[in-house]
Image 1 (cartoon, one colour):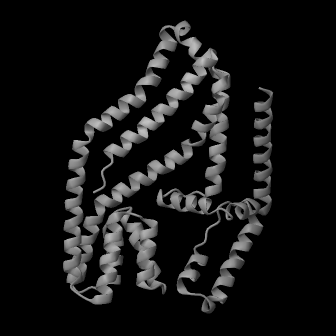
Image 2: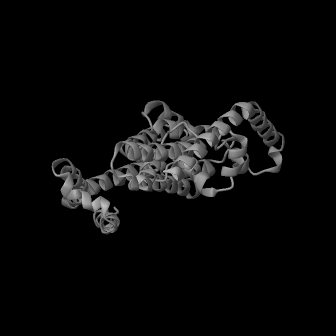
Image 3: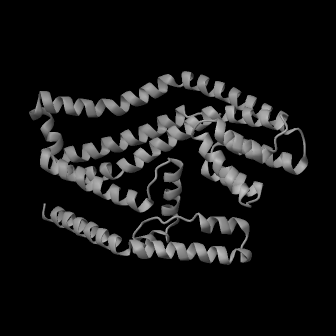
Length: 322
């Protein structure tokens, strides 16, 4: 208990110090960001177009300069910022990391204070810490799923615009105005990048980085090949749209065939916690040795490990790539 109190005090004091530092250094951090952008504009002729665009759109990982410099040393934190952008969360990676720490400490305190099992506070720290990341992952998955559903419609709109005589770049702006989110925002970024001087090839590659979906890679590959070798772009886009829709049909059939496996996975993962909670309410004396005896602790760890392994095995079986 004393060790946990020391950890909580350390975390609280650290957050207070970081908050004070953020208030004091926010003005200087904004000035530094402006100086970096002005320097990148003045030296634009010395860089390649892709490097210039990366510098201009470089965002801070934290509003605290010291923490921002520390986080930039890790490529995984930079990937986390990209992950948050793909989830359409207007927050920084540093804020998410602090939120993970706070959630972990909060869940651990709840287990210590409100439950008769304080020895599982470490498990509460782990569970609480992954809550913010899990929410971001859920938002990202839902956004990509909606993107996939609307993407054939965007390709059809692009094909009709090209067939009507519009230029490819002009048709991109048409998609950003006609199709709903998240298609509109991504194609608007694509249009603005090529509008401000970035080559179309680089702008398309940036689209695949922002939306790493197989259908988007097909689209970018088809457009790049057409621009290099020539051909009827409208016909290529029509065939691509048809292929994506047929792929969706196969994916839905696969979900039907794997429904039993997914239901089995949910039952196997949810049944043990439900039984433990039910026995704790109905007959606490019967389930108490599982949490009080050292052998019970070993059994709990073994059970959680086997449950996790079984989850990934079943998930691997029912996930069929189309």
